Each structure stands twice: as C-alpha cells, then as structure tokens.
Length: 245
Image (tube, rainbow, N blue to C red; front, side):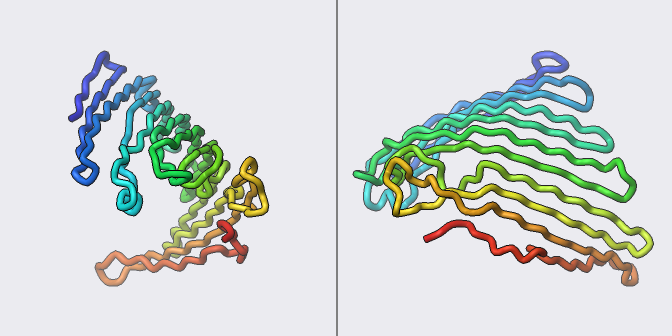
C-alpha cells in the first residue's frame, strides 16, 4: 500500500507499507517506507528516503537450517537532481544498515551484520552540437560479517571506486553514430589462505580498466528504419582479474 500527497506546492510526501509472508519459513514481516521531496525550482529537487527491506535466506541454506528469520536492511538515502535542457546532474549519498544476516560458521544462524555507505555522482551534457557525453562515479564502503566470514570484512563483489566516461558523436553526413566509453574500477578483495583471520580479505586484485568502441550506422532501406551496429569490447586488450581461487 502506498500513499502520495503534497504538503505544500513544493513538498511532496510518499508513505508506504509492505507486508510479506513466506510459507516456506512460516514467517511474516511488515516493512514501512517513507520518502519526501522538496522542489527547489522547476528543474531541480532534493529528496530524502528511508525504509526497511527484508529478504528470505537462500533455499540452499533453508534446506539445512529451517528455523531462520528474514534478513533485514534499513536504508537512508539523500538525493539532489537537476535537469536542464542541455545537461543532467545528480548526486546521491546513502547508508544501509544490515541486520540478521545469515552466518554459516560455526553454526548457521541469523547472527550476521554489516553496512554499506557511499556516494554516487552523475553528469550528462548535450550542449555541444551532435555530441553527448556523460560521467558517473561511485564510492562504496561496505563491510559484512556473514556466511563463513570470521571478521567484519569487505565482500569480494565490492569495489571502493567505480567510474565511467562515455562520449557519443553523430556524423550527420553519413548518418553514423560513434561512441567510446571507458570504465575504471578499483581492485576487489580476494581470499588469501596465507593470511590470518584478522587480515581476512585484506588483499586486492589489480585495478580494472576497460575501453569499448561502438559504431552505429543508420541507413534508410526503402521505408524501413535500420540500424547496423559494430562493437568492440576491451579495445586495449587488458587481462582483467576479478578474483582468485
């Protein structure tokens, strides 16, 4: 259920309530959520959001341990966004608190916990004729103690820094769109068996660099709109490393 209202001409409020029941676990939950936005101008606004989220443990875990509860996370998000004719700008900060995560060592329980906090930045510009580019960046700080983690540690799927720059140009004479994008990501944690439990997942893979090229040709075949796309991934031929086993 969701309720939307305008408190004033510039302030909007959305309140929601989600109820869920799992027959497999024989458990239920109720998750309240609240969001408010303030219109700074016709083209920009500031918003805040809060809410609880639940997730059922994986079936593979429930097979071995039936009496588990839902995992829970509480989200706090603040966002500013501006949309003008030639550009879009958005910045967002967030904090998410994890409770009752599933731990499998020394026994399978809901004793795990953790957090993730970070910021995201997005800029898109179309002010140059036949050229469009955008830049995105995100910083993520996350640690969890769950599954078989002996201490609070950064998960292997989290990179602290991620950035993407993309540029597209349309050549109208030949009706061809050329796009180039570059993605960077800092190294991810990996398990090194030579480390003690205090330094669990303290090692990092090398940084990720990836350049992609796309050429789109838009010919007119009779009355049919046609697009022919040519794409090359990892143009520089980097040997990417996502982890070790």
